[in-house]
Structures are given as structure tokens and as C-alpha cells.
Image (cartoon, helix red, strand yellow):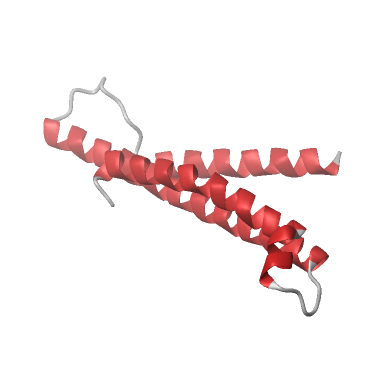
Length: 120
């Protein structure tokens, strides 16, 4: 029950962050017939807000991945454990699974940043 509320709160926070980022860009409209220069400026604002939202979400995601790894090692670690026993522990399995999850995730973030504003 409580986990569902936290998930709903997270969705709400990111929805509000998206709305704030879009409002800072003064919207995006094709109806008012403004000059092409102003139109390009609106596109740049929209791209920058998307990039900032992507970076904020990615940093929160990486932070929670780090929390998951830390907690899983703290639950299953032994004082004088070898490297092999650490890899076989819950912490090691969590680290490997998050690592394999992060490879395509970070490649996707790179592609988004590259296509949006040419950042690499």
C-alpha cells in the first residue's frame, strides 16, 4: 500500500517538473505567426528543457541504483569476505544486474542528448 503511494508521488513530482520546464520555455505554438528567429528560439528552449529533465531524471535514477547496491551489500556482507564471495552475495548479484541494466539505459540517454542538442 505505502509503496504505491510513493510511486504515485514520484510520478506526480516528475509531471510537475516537466510542466515547470515546459513553462520556462514559454510554450510551443505555431499559431501566432511570429518570425522564424523566435520560432527557432522556442525550439531551443524546448530542447534545453527536455535535456535538463532527462539529466535530472537520470541522476535520480543513478542515485536510487546506488542506494539499492549499498543496501544489498549491507544486508549480505561478511567482515572478512573474499571478492568471489562478495560477487556471489546479494550485493554482488544486485551490482551485476544493475550494471547490465545501466548499459542500455546510458546508451539511450546518450542518444537522447545527442539527438536533442548535439551533446556527447
